Length: 489
Image (cartoon, one colour):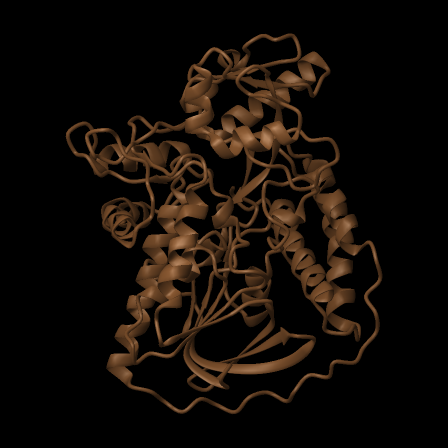
């Protein structure tokens, strides 16, 4: 690893990797992955990528309308128009890179339907689309001589200096400083702020916390999506997702009595947007005094199920459920974030030279609720845009000398007390789940705010545990502060 680069990308999901592909060979790029390059929320994405690729039965206006409806018309229309109109070209570039999307016998890309979509427009690789994309992007980025990829490195601070930034890294238990003219934050979501989530263990909101500490604007962090069909594994913090596409292919949602109930709450039934279905489940849970709910797709051909959903089928078998014969136990849990680091349509923050892309951002695309399979599309479109904007600035301004690095941090300090993250998760799960509890906002905020102040003002050793606890606390504090202040969701 060198001391200075033109661009540092923090995060190695679809947004970070796709951005790295855009840079010319004369632009030096560092991609920093918190853990293994294979571990990201992007890799867990099952359903697919939504894009208008066939205009015989679909068009941009329909995709825009579906996105606005799902987002409760709180979307940024120009951001949505950019997403929908530019996205198809990015999807086709993935196809040209060799991403193994499913095809029909005719040779055309297969397209499925998911909740909230009015047309079959989601291209996919079985039920593990994210992994198929990430794997190919890792290969493609690995071939670029101007891109250095560093794994098991955690960014613990970002400092703004003249003409760029210096980043503090924890790598092999050492504290290092590395500088760049531009920084792209692509660190994903905040799932580990909750007790139960579909997110991987790395989703602790680090990029959002770092941007906040630097002075970047954070918007609508309380716009959190709870997915209605996570596998209801006993006491498992990370709950694997039963994709929206399972309902799109005909699965029905049943209560503890084995009855379909979703149509009681919305005329779209199981295919209503995620927030609507999650709300229906919780209300039905209260009405029946039970948290026992199921997805049932056993009426479909077993071979179709195994071919269409091999990963979900395999994961269910590991839990003792054969989805071709058994009902799948499911219940809502935290899944996605619609708010985050505020960016414009160039993916640029309010801090010169700082960009952000992917789930950690607030582009305005999703409004108050994400439409299924728009997330990977957003990661592609806005990470490419960020890279293009950086290239434009490099060409316009040339390379300028980077200001001096900050004084090195000391590795010494007090040991972090145990239980901080556990307590924050308990607070968030109790205070702000599918049906929020406004009467608890103020007290919960005060408790989390005290935790944040303690973490920031005390002399704790800079370790991965400390950084993640600080990130979770800062993120939870911002969410609860928005809620108690009554910021429009």
